[in-house]
Image (tube, rainbow, N blue to C red; front, top):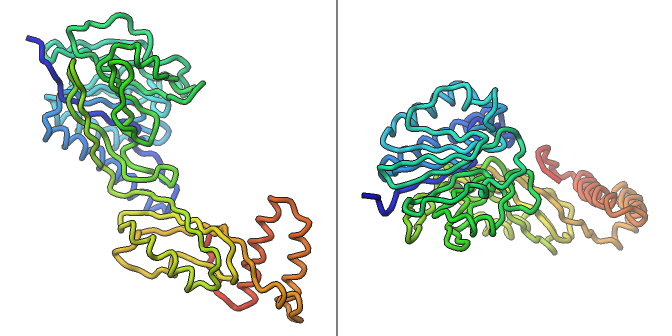
Length: 375
């Protein structure tokens, strides 16, 4: 008797062994280990949930940096769940080719890796057909969703693939129409590192789970994967967080403040939105009255604060012009010369000159100039 539904876990874009450029080498190594731990946690969760099919929609590894230790750890994770079928669709960062992990290691019997040809694996005991195709190079110009022919409508049909819904993409271009006309019951997509909700085109459900853990400020928020039930009638998927740390980026308008203390008082309430699991980048904007420079240390140390704070200062200084122009001091002379250059500068040059005014006035007033401040 054909099973009416199947329990599915869907992850993508893990990028195991990918380097973390933010922070010290020891912090980067710690994050790399945490990422491997997040993958192991996901497999353990699948075991607890008695998942039937575990889908990995590309970029499980970062092929440029992957180590033997990591591959062996992943193999142990796969082998720890022999009752579950794992399906991997290699992506643009871990393509299936002569030098890849997929070609040069023997995976456990419960793991199937799709290569460059469209393929169907029938799981008669589950009443499921799992389709897929893998990248064989860093680019893939065909739609990974189209071209599978007529599907067996008596089976639950699932597609796992790495694809991009950006128009004219070189990374497996996918359109909503491709999905709607595919007749799959669920399309498990990868490549986009921000999760989508469970979506539907025609009679086909589809989703991007996002990456498993953010690696920088271009991958903000908590990260994780989808799990749930796929059937002929309906698909229900639930998103679960697996990231331990997260990156966040906010903008604070500090217009009108005159000194560092006023700026800190304005920013501090925003910090309460985040916890100690967060690396937070703050972009300061607006026109300020005084020459002050903020650094992360100005907020003190507390377990209630983000574990890492970065400041990008894009404020424009607006000091007391009338006083400075008349001031017969080095500070006054500096400001007059800088103002003359600012008046004749291009837009790009104005950014540099404004920054120079801000730092120059702060230095001439004897204020601390933090070496790690971003401007």
